[in-house]
Length: 106
Image (cartoon, rainbow, N blue to C red; front, side):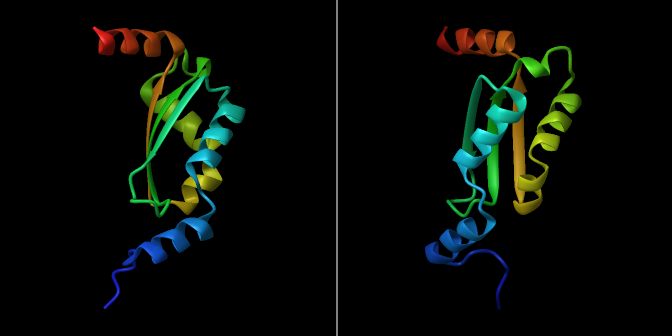
């Protein structure tokens, strides 16, 4: 009985290659469409390209609440998000990101 999930590494690799969604393609799109200064994406799906966490820093998030930021990101990645199972963005302005980095270093 198949659950629909990739059962082997080969199946996971095939799923990633057929969706065409990669960390680098997501980073490129976010940098181009949102003028993102920093993008850090993690594949949470074990390499099959179906679940991603993202840290995105863009001036375009200025004066936007969390929901508006997520909508902006989801709009920029509309095609990509339709092809994957899970997408979790964390969005920061450059000032928020600098403050977060300083707090992490303290």
